[in-house]
Amino acid sequence: MKLIVGLGNPGLIYSGSRHNIGFTVVKYLAGSLKIPFKRDSSVFALVGKAQPGQHNLILALPQNFMNLSGIAVKALLKKFKINPDNLLVVCDDLDLDLGRMKIRPSGSSAGQRGIKSIIEHLGTQDFNRLRIGIGRPKNSGDAAKYVLSGFLRKEKEIVGEIKEEAAGCCMSWVEKGMAETMNIYNKKEWK
Image (cartoon, rainbow, N blue to C red; front, side, top):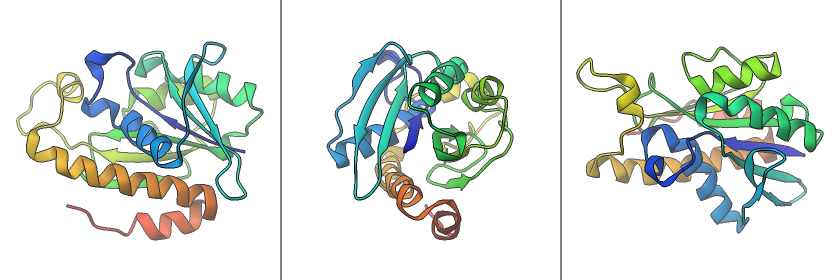
């Protein structure tokens, strides 16, 4: 069984924000696979289940705030008896330009608070993550304010393309594994 978790903040006020690109990608993936989400308070998340091809897949959107994402992820792994090797976390990354993405099997949080929370709660950095670039603010403005802002109109077209590519990357990870997916998607150049 594989688990894909999109990181974001719950609530309409954060919907469509840069920080919620993980939610955006996993919601898009759920829509393309026709997976409905149901609230599961035992794991603090919206959860959807499917069986694409020969694979059992769970999609989840934690409903606690980004910096508490580890609580939901730990509960999801425990409830569904999933090893961290079979976890893929989709999140935003300030250090990647908008429209870039990078998939890795492990690593530090690189300052991403949701990833930091997951590392703290799981006690390991060894879980897969797909980082979606949101870029940095052009001036040296407040990064916290920037990540909670919405995308500009000219950026929304790029977001539409990247969520489709990122969903394809997630399915490649499910079907082909990390090594092959890294070879395909980490070499691609985007806008």
